[in-house]
Image (cartoon, rainbow, N blue to C red; front, side):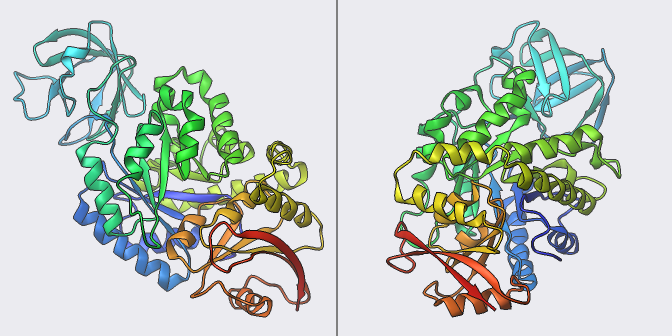
Length: 478
């Protein structure tokens, strides 16, 4: 596979359709850069086995792949539904606490929400499964909430529940989340997603549970899916290592017509902060059942890339879809075509470049100068030896024409950089490499064509020491 088929990165959520090693190998071959484990489903023992298998597969194939652990958060969910339930519009549906006996025949949806009935009133709307199913509360009888289905659809186990204006008493980091963080650390996951972040205090609480010493420092990703998170975005970005535009819950918390504009704003501000940003939810959802996406879905994926997203994430498409590999392949094709337009126009990266030209930090000056040099058509690659990945990310947000090869001696940093647009990460035992050694490394990785190649190399006063990058040089290799 051509390593440079597209700069936009792809994240695949694992599920029944993609748990096998054979399917994961095919997904990596098709171009997946990160695998998401949703801790809302399955158990930790199963997830541990999946992580071990993915690490082995990544090593065998020589392809970095970020392991992403997504915490459940205080999200309200349905309980276990024995089998999918088809609900007709207008049907009488009752919500009942999981474990409580059903008082009679009819459609009952078990839920895991503490004191749900106390927080509702007749007329309240209950959204299920990213808002795809909607139920209007008709009456409340003790713990049982009687509703009318406003739309037809199919309800499955553990789907998320949203109720605008309903406040849960749980904190952002639940006890289950804390166990999830401990599990992620034990198995050295590369990215830990914090769900339903509201403000900087939530990120501080999560970061306090992470290792404070040693080389293993997982990426702490804030999922932007609440009204409060949008209002506190800048303070969240200051404490997060990456963000996700989680459009499912965001589109219920806020008017759905605001989501396109919010997506653009969140991505732009993440780019300015040099924090990787993933766009998620219903990107190619029709491919769960169909061989081809809709035109609107293709346009949605392209627009996320044009907005400046580093990565696109698939959920149901790769977790339960009939052909996860086809989803990844079409996404890579969309990305490749869209990036050709970005190269010609500069896109939103021009705004980011203009904004940082007024900054006076050495990091911003180096990334801006590197990008300027990379715009020269005679330059083929940027090479950034890095301890933390910061320099590579700062250059990547400017979306230069050539690829950025990030060379690091930290496996976790390498895997996290696999999620940054236009970055090709390489692991080496030591980043203290001469220009000749760097050139040989690129050749052995198949990243240099025949003939003379011109490279831009960033460097620091101290090899492998974070925060010391302060120079760049241009060399020709053959």
